[in-house]
Image 1 (cartoon, protein in one colour):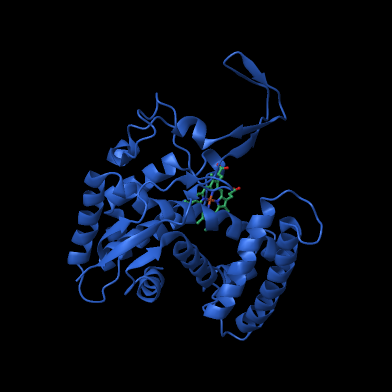
Image 2: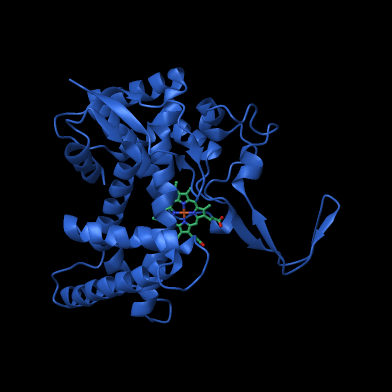
Length: 331
Ligand code: HEM
């Protein structure tokens, strides 16, 4: 993943005086997913798949009116096209696995194709397509949001900005030419991770999660009857003064000492309990590596509009104009 991100910076950021962060981050997250999920590295095919995914996402958040020209109809058509392309990838990979050209752990596609449940049953092609669709939905916009916001928020807190840059520079300084980032390095990025956690507190990418009451629940004078669905939203606790004083301020130090001072279940950007997001560590690595490669390439940056609004329309919260920044390369 690190080399993929390093390559992305070489191709899309280096040599530029100014960039718009949001579209670049979208391209990066999609290219990581298509490489690690089904080993599609070809730029042209990635672009086509990326466009289809974006159309599906827009369609899934639109009013479900199945008429020609509506976003919903375009989303449905894009899903059919995406399934068609993925089906041909599945067919080819099945044959490559049989002939030994592909291995059973090379990417998510191979893992799904060779998966067997406790009774020895495998997934159907439709099951694999549905898994891909779920993974794309769950992993794309969610990770794009903190990556598009982190440098905007860091800019508002010079003390933490400095800490994050110093932390990354120390890691970079200890590396030999061409040496890659290790697990130990990722674990040592404590200020960077605190800053990411704080951005996920202020702007949780997932607005809410549902839970079903499996028994009557009595809470604070109210009864939630068995069978009702309850919507829990991170915004209800993330922005409460009693849990996070001055909640409108970007203050990553709230997560010092590995978040020990945070009241349990008040900080839930990845949900909680049995259904906690299974991709949270994956996204943690993506975001930490993104910050790492940024600092490796640039000594500083200036937002074109430091007061650019963050909009959640549609979700997730993103910088309103894509967050343009002026870049200063590291010599
Ligand atoms: C910053 C990035 C991410 C955020 C904020 C996020 C947030 C969430 C949240 C709130 C849930 C619901 C959890 C619950 O019901 O308690 C969830 C579920 C899920 N996430 Fe993520 N997610 C992120 C990245 C990812 C990534 C990168 C992947 C995959 C590689 C992923 C895969 C999933 C899946 C498959 C589920 C459904 C789990 C289930 O229903 O059991 N997520 N995520």
